[in-house]
Length: 574
Image (tube, rainbow, N blue to C red; front, side, top):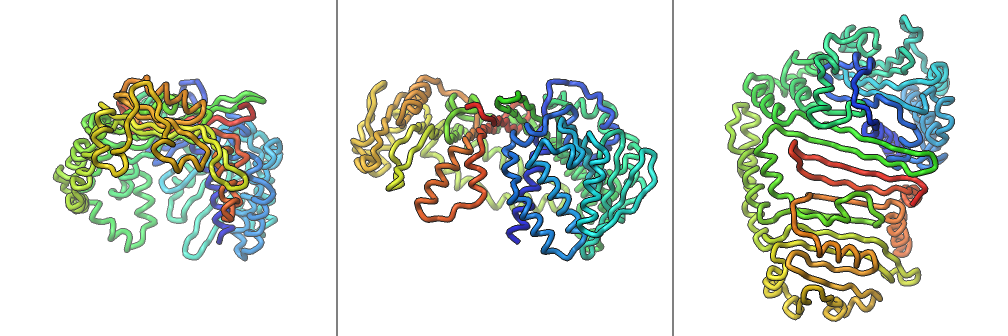
């Protein structure tokens, strides 16, 4: 079971990277491949201009070493242990894929896929379709031939204008599906089709027919890119609107039609209440306000240099009152964390205006519970939410009403190899509050032990060892400074510089959550600490400690909704 989970994790990581990775400066939508994507698709991930495959791996920390002989061996063992030919077929394909990832220069030879890759993934109803541009069509077919030889299963040849069309039949218990593989116009196509789906779906999945309305009909994709400020050549989405239509109607889109054909009597009975006009109207109203999740990204790479990836994920809402309410709780994030990838081992900042937090959450809670939904299931959900009134919990926030944010940054950390205690640290901790000095003086009367601390004057430092003697055991002397906006505790050259910069910054609403990490350094420290304590070190840590990747993610509220902007830097240059 553990080996199966590892294999699933490896493949899932590659899929995640495929969904996430895209990048180009172009803003055109002139790609004939999109004419095959139905307008009612629930999901789309399209990389429409080439990206170097090695950069694709490196940008997401999926380096060739990660897909080493050990990973391939795990898949081979899984294939050897199963007596299911169909599972051996899939595991054989996965093993070949791992082999190509371990030797990227062999990508075209092993799989036929172009090293400068373009790809598209989407749904035709319930059928997932994956398309990848090929450099060598014969090598692509040989990939499947080797899987057939390893598993003992064979394909059924289908007629087609462009040559090879293959059908592989899979049966797992009561579940059955058909894997359709084809090559059209230099693209390798794979689609999973269910026996309940009709010939029209098969034709769309095989790309032998085009939908009446595609994703580029009426400038649909261009409008999405324009409305949400996304790169149309490197774009993806999950449509909440199409998903709700598929689940609450019998023929509102291809997904709904497929679900009706596939559904068991028990499922149909369970979903029947959601098919009422009242539920359809209420859910339509919700998805008009929250239409989906949208993402894009940009990758820049240079041979022998670093690879940089910028990504954006947006959950927009048309409800401007919700945006204004969420924006009101934004707080302060120190500039050295908010501005992007840094040289720190780890950083985290939480920006919340605690004076606005309770009123905002209360307003949002009332907005969720007070509209009178006509759909009985949504009305019942509202009643349950009404019983979970957050006011009692939020009342505890009165003690921190002045707080605007807090952060921690670890620039460097050294452990004594003998005692494994901290022997050196370069770090900075900050708490930002309006009238911070007055606020902290008030806390001193309520928090045991703080009454004895005399806060330093502006510009003066207080060695924390003088009030916390136990710090002497670590050989570290953190310093404390306070002004009317910030309290900072710091040690080391970088921590001192960050603290001084933070003290000079005016309080402003510039973020909500920021997170950063240097993978190799962070997991190197974790590995060292686990080894010293006698704890077993997971095998996966060995790859993480060699991963020269720095990440930074900022979650915030902008004028369109909830947004996460991420940056990743990977490469030899430090």
